[in-house]
Length: 109
Length: 109
DNA sequence: TCTGCATGCCTAAGTTACTTATATAAGCAT
DNA sequence: ATGCTTATATAAGTAACTTAGGCATGCAGA
Image 1: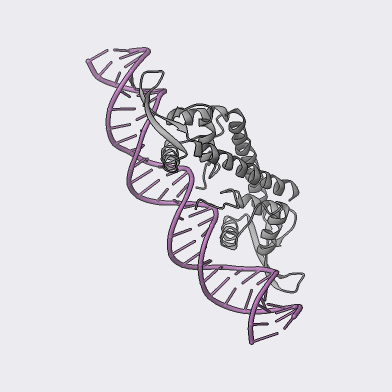
Image 2: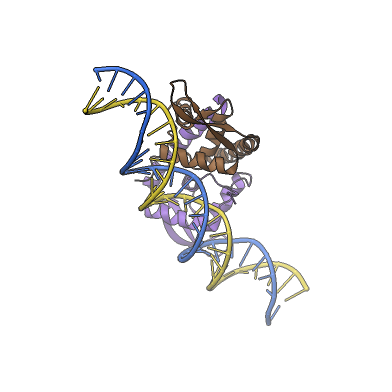
């Protein structure tokens, strides 16, 4: 079956943290935003999304609060914590480092 | 502990196939080459390497043959098959597509 | 009115690809 | 003979997914 892979394994945390770096969002909006910004290349399914959000919350990188959306519905809004901002920088640096390294291998054989 | 992560999950197949695209190599040499070319950013441990090679062989993307190395030792040399070359192109395209998408998210928040 | 769709949350089971640890063996140098 | 480098390999454990469900609300259309 291999994987259709609409995500690069291990980058979801980075994507979520980065998406939250502008303003708090609820899970559904985060997934939609990632999909839009990536030109639909990245698909965050709910089975990946919610466990990831709980993971990040448990790590103390994001915090949750129920609030009403623009459309008048209850939703769980997440925002970056200070620790989350630090973590985002780490993951960004890690991504740049490793993806560049992959790029090197691709170019230099 | 998180992961020290000296690899991006799911890219190992691509790295191996690409490394074999110039000439046949044995496992040990593949790992060394990836490490060198990446400026030591990527580390392929043996526990990841050998299962990956067997996986790729089973898929029919590489084929193995025992041969003697320059240093006069027996080693298992792998070379890309035709199917492997096709697969390499697929994985390359996939990588470019997805890593660019991650780049978009990073830049556009 | 009720039917369906989009929004919004969630979990469970299964799979995959790793990490970590261990085992084996040959060649070479001290 | 002791230890280091080269070289292969497997086993147990884990993290992060995929796939497949379930539940509830608001709104639009027939």
